[in-house]
Image (cartoon, rainbow, N blue to C red):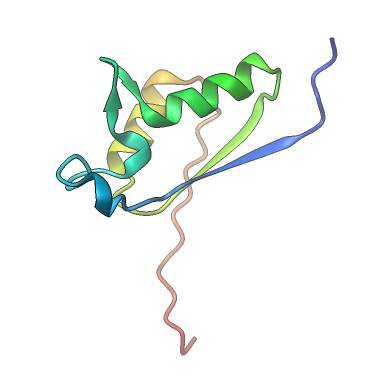
Length: 90
């Protein structure tokens, strides 16, 4: 089966207030689940197993642990670009 020509965009920036204290130091998608897995792993695994291999993960809230987990666990082409915060007046 040929690889689909689809770019998957995963929005993974949730604060997760209802999951406190688990989200006190990390984004909701980075919360551990079942040992070494994170919540985001289920979505990424489903896409990869469905042959959707062009995946972009957009992070926002406390993204350090999520970025680290993705770069250490998944073999994504690592192109991390941080955009500066823009004020509404710009």
